[in-house]
Image 1: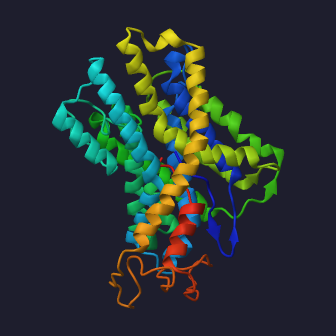
Image 2: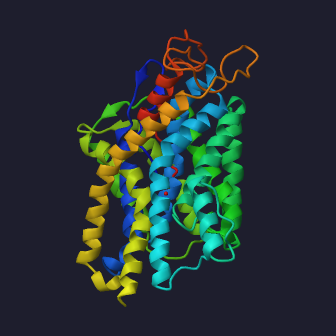
Image 3: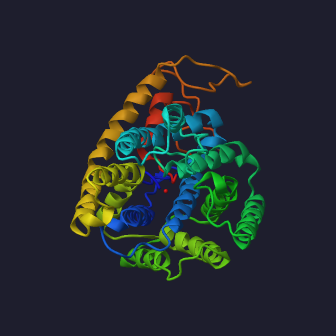
Length: 409
């Protein structure tokens, strides 16, 4: 799941508003699926599709945003620092809310973690790393379960930043075909849409690589959006149809539909811009806050209900609908908190000393201060090395402000 999209190519910035709308709708679908017991008896049958869509959108957007910068000297280390800064504040807040939910769970006799396991889950969760507490819980991030997708997102980001010079269209196609074959083989053997728990942890790698590098391949093959039309709304009902596909087993058929339906959906959404993008932009801004904090918040609610002997269904439907509305409002508030905290992190990063490690003497890390010469490029044409007139602080600030992913989920 992920922050608003503002990819850059050449001198122009293109904001993919239709992708923002898709991402926001997918985040709300995940939210509704997780709180379904407190709303009604049905659920979003294929909510896991949303995560694969997040991965695919992420690959598309990061390719459009960062390949010109990689070509002009942006290092993998600095790129990954930008990714962590972009994802960290809201996810860390979600982990702390998850710690509160676990404390409530102790009182309600619903926590499976002991003291050392809880401390381990907290430390690894705050680092966006899997928690080695598989003896107590199957979740790889017990204090904020959606974090599994952010971990795999960062793995894909790291692989992309290191491999991008060798990622021709042919190489990308080979990666997509190979990982797609892995997904079908795993589904045939009963492991579909893995990565969410320790039992399917290794299956998360082909899952994220297939979707992420499919997005990169599509970005390499597409130009700028060519039309502004009301048909930009068309991908939204198509995604709803996919999310409510009426069977419940995760099987080969399920994986095949995802592999065949999502690439053209992404192409359609990236090719057309809405005439009035304000609602799409709002959906994009709210998507990551909703995704990052909704699950531990709902866990707090359900465990508080357990303290008084009530199941989640006891507050349906109005309690669940009120919770949904509250998360949407909180998401709009947290969007501002996220921006302020990321600015604070940038000031801490800008105080770090320079660490020259490149043969040409350019900085491999960040920064002396706003007056320092930029190690990386301004937005420019692919393969062109512009004059270094931007400070590293402003470069990263621009990336954090205008860049987006997920992970996603």
